[in-house]
Image 1 (cartoon, helix red, strand yellow):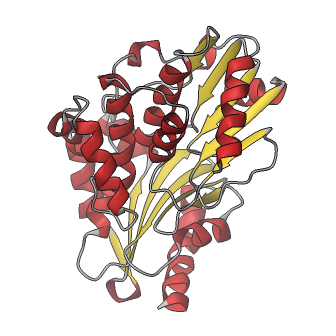
Image 2 (cartoon, rainbow, N blue to C red):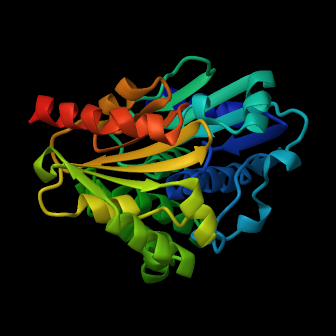
Length: 327
């Protein structure tokens, strides 16, 4: 991310008459925070029609302006500019993917190591940034945008999500310094930490218990895999957001190097979340499992177009081999 690329983004936003800000399917705190902060800042110098794509679950529906987020059915027929944030264009919802393909201008603002820069007119990519929200803060500072409490809240939400409340390896000195600045703008950290990182529904609590109870260990305890079959999700009636935090509980088990949460998303679709503690590059692991895999060195994900049973036949051996290869 350079001064020239930041200026190119500002010019693209200034010229557009309709703009769509979007994260990937199932956006998280960094996706929502980055999109909403950049959209609010853009409104200070542009009269364009602006939409932020995504539906906020209970972890994020308290964010200022969350009621204005739109789903695929509410999208305009076309947008002058589509800005993909915190995840590349291979993980968009079907409706957003179409608008992206039809848009005369596109941009990427992201910090994922695995993201491709192909297919964008403007690219701001910094894999060394702990979060996309930290990138957005630097962008807005370069544009001399005055942050208000809402923008600070969006940015803080993304920062604590992607750093796990400042406990993940990606946390930097600058992360704490930025958090301190945001607190001076009226951010309420206790509320945000509770809502984003800790709160869960009663069904989510039961889900956590069942996944941990039935988790399986491999590689002498260095690998732990938890599974959420559709039957379990349906029986408990889990809500969007209930799966967040489960993988962290598994990773924080003594002796574990890699944790994997396996979620059945359909008869032939399985989604994986991968986390490592100290030495395994789970982004590489995710990409080795499927072309629809990637992320960060210590946190990654993948979508595999196979049945749950088929995935579980080869997944433990694949993760075990990665741990043994990098030990």
